[in-house]
Structures are given as C-alpha cells and as structure tokens.
Length: 427
Image (spheres, rainbow, N blue to C red):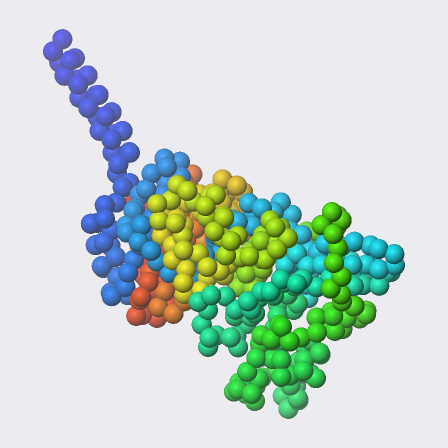
C-alpha cells in the first residue's frame, strides 16, 4: 500500500517537473544571453537589444534590453507596412473625373508610375486609352523633398531620391552606355536637355569608367521639373496641367491597378525608400486629402501603440532618418500585428527568406532546421534584423538590433546568424 503511495507521488512529481520544464526551459536569462553575445567578437563595443517571442505561448524566450531605444534603419519599414495594410485593402493609383471632353486626374501619392524597377504598366495603359484631353490636377500642398534626419551626402544616390506627391520614374534618371565608346544615354529623354536638374551631375566620377553592363540611377530635383512634359513624353500623348479647384462635394473615381503585391515586395524585399515614403504620403492623403506626414505618424502611434511604454520616435517611412528610435519590444508588437492581419502564408510571401537570400554567404547554412523571413535594416555602424523564425510547428517573432558596431556589415551578419542558430536549438 505504502509502495503504491510513493509510486503515485513519484509519478505526479515527474508530471509536474515535465510541465514545469516545458514551460520554462525555453526561457533564456539575460545573463545567459549576454554570455552568448560576448562570445561573438564582432559585437564588442556595440549595443545589442533582442527579443524572441513564442507566438503560441505568448512568452518571451529572450528579452534582452528590450526597452532600450535603438536606431532601426530600414526596420522602420515594418511600421510603414503595418500602417499601409491597416488603411488599404487595395492600393489606389490615381483619382479621376471626366468633365466635358476633359479627363482630369490627380495623384494619390502612388509611386510606381513609370518606375524604372517596378513599373506599373497598367496605370500607363489606362491613361493612354482615354480619348479625352488628359489634364493633371496639381496638388497645392508642399512636400519637403528630403525627410528629417536624412544625410546630406546621400542625396546623389538612388536610395535617397526625393519625395514628391506624384513620383515619376522613381524620381531618378537612368544613365547608361549602349556601347563601349558610346556617349552617355539618359532616360527619361527629357533630362538630356535638362541635365542641370540631375543631382551632382558635375561630380559623377564613375561615368567615364562605366561599362556597357553598368547602369546608374541618379535622383533629380523634383520641384524643378515639368511634370506634364515628363509624362507626355512617357505616354507619347499630350498631358496638360491645371490648378483648377474642384469642390470637395464632387466625387472622384479611383483607379486601382492591382499592384499591391509588387509594391509591398518592393518595400520589404528590395527595401525601396521612395516607395516607403510614398506609402506614408498616400495614407496621409487618404485620411485627410492633405499632406501632413508628421500628423499621420503621430495619429497612428496614438491609436495603435497605447500599450507600449516607450512609444516609437518615428520620423519617416523608409528609415533613412537618423532621428528614428524604437525599441525591440515595439518591433515585436508590430510583427505580431502584421501576423494577425495577414497570416503566416502572406508573411512568408511578402518577407524575404533570409536563409535563401544568403546562400552565397555563410550567414546561414542549408542544414538548419528552421527558416527565417525577416527585414534587415542598415545605416552606418547600425544593423538590425527583425521578423519570423519558423521551426516545425513553432513560430517565433524576433527582433535583433545592433547599434554602434565597429565591424564590417558581413561580420555583424555572421555574428547575428550564429546567435540565431544557438537560440533556435533551444526552441
């Protein structure tokens, strides 16, 4: 009888221990995680913040300096993406109204019109087939071409093209050579006669060294160009412009070209900065038919981040701003909201798979039993990786942020990869 009693005690003890172990064995203390970090020399002298959240259990596996403000770089695009999918079921390309034999159209802030990499041909065809006179309704609101906290010496590069209310050709010119000894070709052709509108053309040191396979994309001055001339050339059809005012009571129709997948992939896979900035402009216009990015961001934070102790200090859509500061906890919050809105299948579609993208490096090897779908973010001496780790039936949200590092980007990526592999083995 006594033996049976002790057997029951031992049995229940094993059960309780198993349950206890299952619940708490995954938790990695700050002390243990710090030791993991310290084993990677690439992190020496840097600031690291990290969170790993088990979605099913809604428990943090790692919670290391999670409330410390960090520079997110392009990880801020996660906030932009969440805002976009919160406001748009479909992406509006233009708004238009027909009056007499005139076809008036105005911008929604849409960035893919004539884009050199993600061209929306559907929008161009829609405008081309109009039999009435095309008239572009100018937006009277002023937009600051460069965002707050952008680096002044980045202005000549594709990734720092100017913001505008109706971007065309990504607000860049394409420069290339047709043959080895040929002259420089520029597209749109409009800029052949207006080279002074192309940023820092006088300091292009690379042009003389350009090979036939090379292509440069250089921003132009958006507030100096004739937009109607640009799109007339592009559409091969005369486009006029006007400041004519329409009463708010007049309802415009909206043209949707169905490029949601392309625009979001360009945002997350290609990390296109102009597209990120344009999405914020579109949201601002959608809410108030006006342009006030600061107010749009402020309202979105107030309405969606009331549960977060340290609110994001969010200044632009792309992450070019050095003023942006967020915590890894707030990024986890954003990743969770994205997952709730679109589900894991769409997450894996819109987010790049880091394992696959890095096969040419030793960042991850193909033998790992997990997959990672995540967004990178890099500014000088700062690198972040945030997204979704999928292992068997488990889904882990993570944000790994490294600021003020003094190593090469590849060294930091390698070190982050090693830490992720170690964490995944404990899941």
